[in-house]
Image (cartoon, rainbow, N blue to C red; front, top):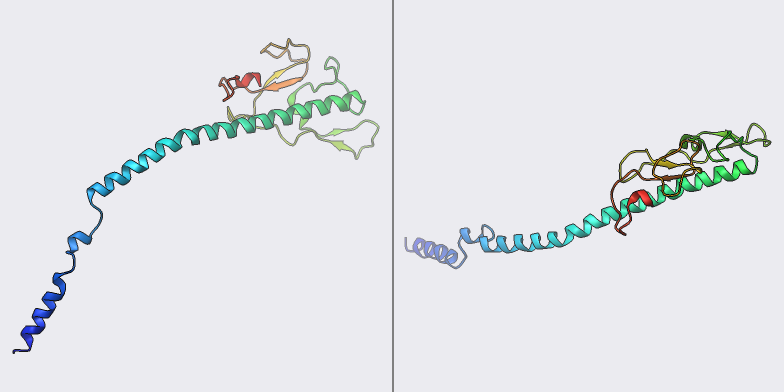
Length: 172
């Protein structure tokens, strides 16, 4: 029996110096509060940056869509001035409607196998989320916001918002 006592005493003594299981369970409330404060302050700094970067990306997409459509209108005008496309009466060589840019056209004098399409589809306005655009004809005033309906000379966004540069999207 004498041997059992030192052994029990040794086991009890061995665990006495270890930290209690309650102290090992997790973080203290102070540590959690400090971490939460740091995360909130970092997200408060990052949120405006993310908001402006999303708006800047949409503005870049809008510029690209406008440039793409205006180049297609100019190319249509070039082809009609060269006599490769039939010109509708009163359109001055510009497309009568925006949908003419996505249709396939047989080029005059080039044979039936030569087909020209100026755009694959009408782009979506990233500011409104629709494929609808404000149009301006060649006969309209330069500061007019209504379309006369004769032809499509220019396009612009229907959004009422203002860009990061301070210019409304309808004037881009």
